[in-house]
Length: 114
Length: 117
Image (tube, rainbow over all chains, first blue to last red; front, top):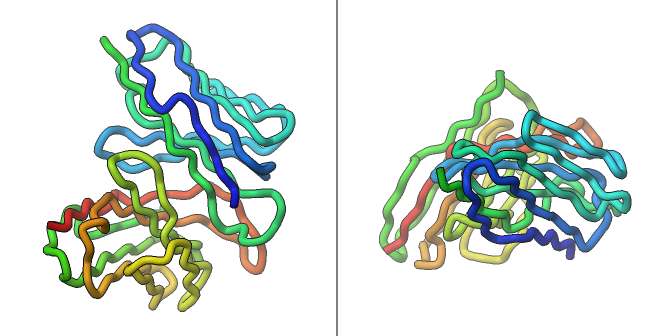
């Protein structure tokens, strides 16, 4: 079945440093979604990318979808303590079948030292 | 606006006891509904999903079951809990498209933290 891998599993940075997490799927994705889960909270949708090579920005966050639609990245510029949490990527396969479900990566836990 | 409710927020149950977790969605109709489990604060494991009343798809064989008695109500149950059932249970909804496929974002409820002792 489809697998979505994320690296790194953990990342600890000093406040102000940049952070990047990478997501790779074993199959082509119709779209890629990113979620953030604060400690003790529930996942919250951040963004969805649909087009091959698409890049979207949300303030200090930059999201990219690979040309082959099998990988994605999230880059945070100048991290702040409010960025702490686990970042998940998720996507449905593009090859039909049971298309109502997302496969989530295991997430990258970001901690920020003030 | 749409809201999703889950209860209870926390639950401590003995091994072998039954379980019933409820999830309700407001402000939308015919949503796709999902139950996930998150162990040790990490990855999300899809347990069940439903595209309509009475329609349940199971992703992982286990001692859990799900039901959707109403359009916006999703229930997760177990007749006898195991220690391995401990975790953070999350319900989510997704907009869906009538008669088609939708890959819209999923909105998660606040979750239920279940500890089985």
